[in-house]
Length: 67
Image (cartoon, rainbow, N blue to C red; front, side):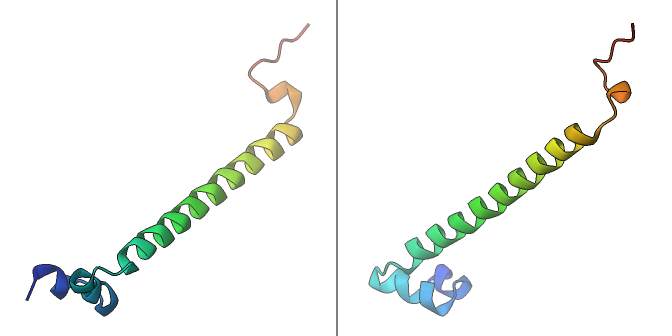
């Protein structure tokens, strides 16, 4: 018995023996999930920054110069 067969799920374990595409599909799926999560975080942070920029009092900005 191979060490990878002990740690892998049944689909991936059979793929080690029969050269299936399940490992490639699972890696591709996880890549899509990670990119979707990172994209959501980037979108959310951009939205927060824009909302804060629109609603901030001009006197509280760092670049405010009083005349």
